[in-house]
Length: 97
Image (cartoon, rainbow, N blue to C red; front, side, top):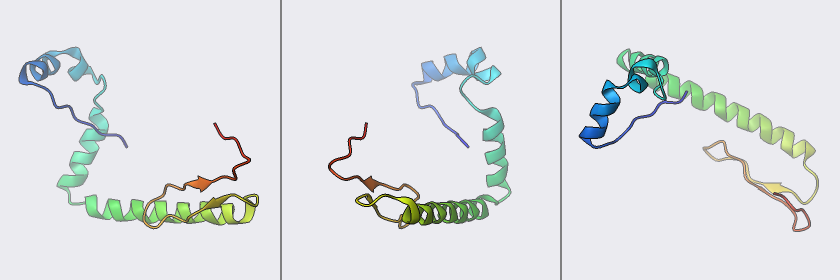
């Protein structure tokens, strides 16, 4: 889910608000923004974040289990301790681009 906002001088905001860019959807995702607005107003955000964190943790753990079984010798990594990015260290002999 991608949301965003724009910070701009008032004269720029006025042009955007009056343009088709703003009205027709352009780069602003009205559907996702509306959904998230409802989620927040209904008090569902905390539960949603907790569920998403649990899913990401489970997926990262499953990936690490697969890496433990299948990585060639000399390749190292650390299991995430709160995030889900996995950084690997390759042997000096490996050229990665």
